[in-house]
Amino acid sequence: MNEIWSRSRPVLNCSAVHFVNQQETTAALARVEIVTARSPQGVLSAHCSMTPGARMLSEKDLIGSWRLAAHYYLDDDGSTSEGPMGDQADGLLIYHEDGYMAASLMRTNLLTAANGTLPPPYLGSRDDYLGYAGRWHVRDDTVVHEVFIGSHHRVVHTEQARQVQVGESGLRLTRRLDGPHDYVVMDWRRARGVAS
Image (cartoon, rainbow, N blue to C red; front, side):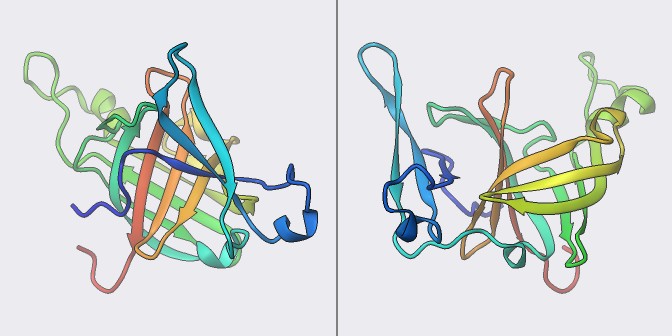
């Protein structure tokens, strides 16, 4: 599986409204780079710098169909680990120009119970597949999914916001977590031709 970006030193976009010269910055993005080195006091440092010539994210950047290329947890120290759907996860993400979207992620390697047996279907299915659909829009450097229907009731009628980075090779969606990991990252590539 090809990686679109390096998994170390995550780069997150941020709004540039705090800079002095508003005319130069309203059409540009500032970039926040989370530095992996900590100070002697244990403080993780971060800085915000301008990206010359950058433009604001637009819906046109996202419209289309995307296949999952990589899915993993990322921590502030740059370490990565297997994502919630496993290291061989598959997925399809569709952003339609009419403002509707659909996302599906599935585990391709079967979950097994601690004793090596398959769990009952109603338990296994909760961890093997996640899908939802609804409306979407871009807000600054974030895509917001307004979930109407989903495979898990906990996501229905919620907004799922993802930090967006668009690169030559694809799309990166990042979500900050509260749990044992700092981020979950999904790298997507444009879906082309016959499904693989």
